[in-house]
Amino acid sequence: MNRRNFLIQGSTAVAGLLLASTPLRLYADHHEQAHSHGHMLPKLSYPHDALEPHIDKRTMEIHHGRHHQGYVNKLNAAIANHHDLEHLSIEALLRNIDKVPMDIRQAVINSGGGHANHTLFWSIMIPGGSEPTGKVAEAIQSTFGSLDAGSEMFANKAKTHFGSGWAWLVVDENKKLQIYSTSNQDSPLMEGHTPILGLDVWEHAYYLNYQNRRADYVDAWGEIVNWEQVNANYVAATKA
Ligand code: MN
Image (cartoon, rainbow, N blue to C red; front, side):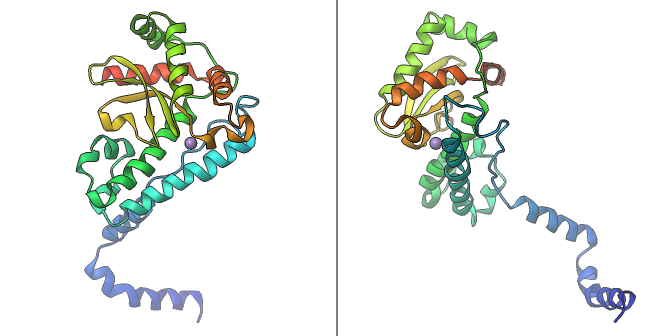
């Protein structure tokens, strides 16, 4: 069979389908399929070794490529049979966690929280670091007394949090800054807060390079914060 014949035969074979379902509909199905890949691992905006010596290359590879990918995979699996949830952003899912069905709620809290938390985490680090700047710097000063006081309070939450979790700088429901920690992958979004800066204190975030010295990791991490991004997060959260 030459190619022309094949095309003619093929078009005859699918003619019935096309009558029942317009080409536009077929395109829409295709589009929907592409969309149902679900949540995706965000790309890093810097190479794995770019945050050295503060965070080593191997830790970044495993943390981003395996841990974060694992949260994305488990989140997608959890919501796979819940078509009403599939097209919601991760932020919308967590902000409306009380509407997520009970049989998958804890999975969304754990894996969806893991996805949201790490997505923020990668974005608020930058090779070479930066200094607090803009509106968020002003707000830290007025809320906590000084930049140093805010920094110390945050670092202290990160260092003293018991077990796995995160230290946060958030914009709360009254547009005020708060510093606190949460356990596991619990996201401030579930409390109606908007996290603008978060520090992962799970051992997987630092153990290869720092072993049990979490305080050293916290202090080193303070030198690679992307304050331009944190300020942009603050401005967006206080405007909304
Ligand atoms: Mn982590």
